[in-house]
Image 1: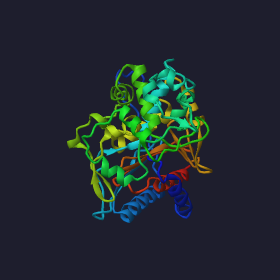
Image 2: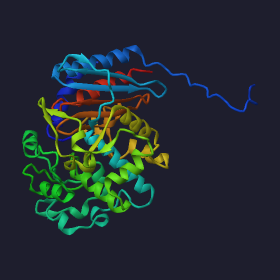
Image 3: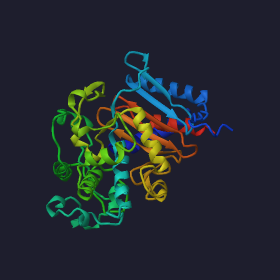
Image 4: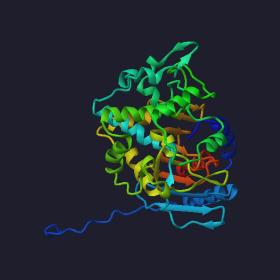
Length: 383
C-alpha cells in the first residue's frame, strides 16, 4: 500500500460512501457437529452488489469472502472484463502490504521471546553506520540514533520512502519481474528519492515501506533465519496455510497476473520484501486474520490485546489510525490493505462481531479503501 495519494483519495471516498451501504460407555464417540449460524441474506446480497459494482465500474476482476465466528464462509466474485460471475475462488493473488501484518506479528513473537523490545533503538539492534549514512537528516541534523523499533512498526520513524510518488514511472522502470533488490539497494533508493519527506522520529505519522524492510532485517538477525524461512516456520506452517508463498522465492512462471491501468504487470517482488512480498488466496488470508484476531500467533493474550489497542496514530484524521502493523478503519475493523502495482487487496476483522473479510482486486489502480469501508459497514450491521 503506497502512501502516494492515499489521504486525498480516502477523504473523497469517505464522503461518497456514506450514502451506500448416556451412551458414555461407548468406546468410540462420534463428534457432535457444532450448529452453524447463517450469514444474513442481506449481508450476502450486499457483498454481491458491492463486488459487482467495483468490478463493472472499473473493468476489473474482484473476489471476496466474508465469514462469521460460527458460520461457513460466503464468497462473491465478478469479472468486469467479461461481465461474468466468478465461481472459482482458489486463485492466488499478491497481498501486497497485508504482508506487514505477518512482519509485525513476527516482531512481537521475538519480543515475547525476550530477544527484542519496542523501545530498543534501531542502531543498537541493527548497527550499520554506512547503511544509515544520510538516511535521516532533518535540518542538517542526523536523527538516526533516535529511531526505535516501535517507530518502524507504526510508521513514525521519519524515514524517506524508496518508491517514487509517480507510480507509472515505477512501473516503467521496474517491469522486469526477475530484477533483484536487496535491502541495501532499497535503502539507497530511499536516500536518492527526490520525493523525500523526512521528519524527526516520533513527531508524526507517514507511511513508509523502508520501515518494514528494516524490520525484515531485524527478524533475520535475531532469528538467524532468512525472512522467508521465518515466516514459513512461524506463521505459514503453524496455521497450515496451504496456498501462501513468499514472493521472492516463488517461480515467476507461476505468478498471478495483476494489472495496472488494465495492462498486465509483473513487478519484482524482491522490491517489496518484508513490506509486501507475500502471495496467497482468499481462504488462507481468512485463516490468517481469524488466527491473528484470536491471538493464536502469540503465547500471551496480552500481546494481541496490546496490538489492537496501543501504538496508534492518525492516518486520516478522524477516520483511520495506524498502529503496530494494523489499520483501524473508522473504529469498525482492524486489518490492512495492500497494493503491488498489480493488485489491490484488503484483509480485516470486525471489532463488533469478529466477522472477517478478505478481497482481491486484480488492478492496482482500483482503490481498496472504498470496498473496505463498505464491507466493514455492511458487516457491522450484523448482530
